[in-house]
Image (cartoon, rainbow, N blue to C red; front, side, top):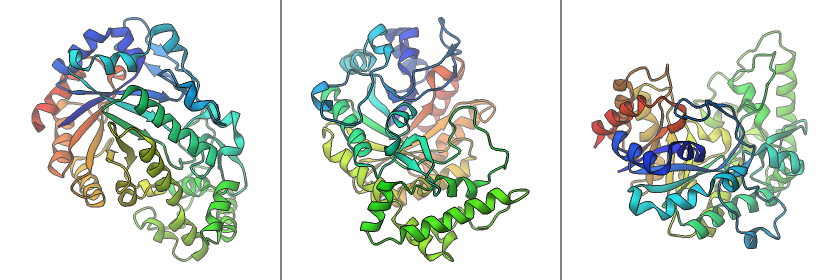
Length: 394
């Protein structure tokens, strides 16, 4: 069974690799580390670190040494984090030390969520119906952005040979994903956020039009909805069966409905290209959420092209976790890998029994393993909660 914990390189460096491996394998009962190999900015409280209690990672960098031979002709290129030069290549250490540590290595790889690259390449990010750029989200329809994501995973798998690569954000992202000091005085509801997140950049417009999609009519419809939501005194639901009905929540707007039916094509095909270019020794899986269709993820179609998925079930009761995993298994089929992502944050997890119940519900519903979030962000004593959850499912 795949039993892993999402971890940042600096967490391992602060603890020391030997101590980290012994703790992850022994105290937490896990057999895999999911290492951040491409990541974004943030502010992290670091309860585990003996050196730093607050950490601000560089924005949009990679935590490995890129192969210049693969990147020399690319428009969008990665930047190696200063951490690698200053403290060493943790991915290399983990991969080479697999027999010693007893830990398999999975690469937690952020694909298109990259504000640094979005600022450098604004013509390759998503744009809303008014043409305003979302600098935090490279667009999956952009050829240059697609080339970046494909080469990123090719580089990791060809030069490091991890056991698995976990793809985060190879898709369209929500407007409210979180950027930096966000301001929203309107009080956006879920459908408002979705409408603001729909991309009508030049790349999406051309790609959709080539597929025969009435993209301009869809854009005009979405722009009208955005104007209307901005003019209301307070937010109102206009689509009462959203998001439960999927794209059919918009069935009374045929051009928008047709656009949303196409919306998953750039994401599905990109994941297929990533898998095709990757070294076959590494399994390629998608990290996704409930209602992944909002970001253009068609799990059934994606599952035919990659090796499976990890579905994050944060802050859900066991019954809801089971529902998500059963739906994921139905979409992927019996042969593909299906993991569940569980967060070990307080107060959503206030005692070990809660975490164990969620993990048990996932395994009973057909999950092949669990990823826990996140090693460096939780107190050491909560690793005992992880072990209790592991003991309950193996």
